[in-house]
Length: 206
Image (tube, rainbow, N blue to C red; front, side):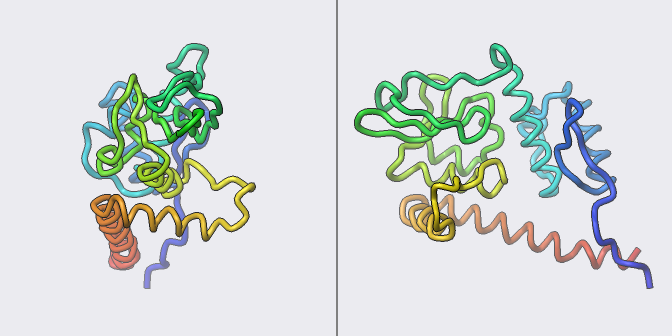
């Protein structure tokens, strides 16, 4: 009986940095798609509908790196103003994504250049303002934080001791205020699990 594959046999890189481990087929697809789209990962994500989970994560990381380098000086600059007023405190969650607070309110702002890493369902939960997709802190922010966690683009900071409770509060907020997004997320996760469960059977059949 053929030996079952136990790991990935290739990897993808951008500018000499490892983006992620993957199969040889995904690595070849990454090269082909990037070449077809002029080397722009965000364009690949916009123009093609479906990717295996590992390849999608790799493309999202590449898009973030490219967007970061395209800014003046190769860095995103923290916003000085927001839809909720002048920014008093700003925390960078990942390149181009900022958690901001003002004198009275706050939220999370995602620069347009990196918005390709968000799912269409997540984009619908925010609103556009001066080059950003914005999510106010009371009812919308949980969506973008959930997206970043799922895509491993952000980790819950150490100052939050009970990380499990933090995630559950995010989930509760999403279920209450954005049930359509929650259903889309759950459907996507189920599709990924189904694809992963059928992969070993396909390998064994070869």
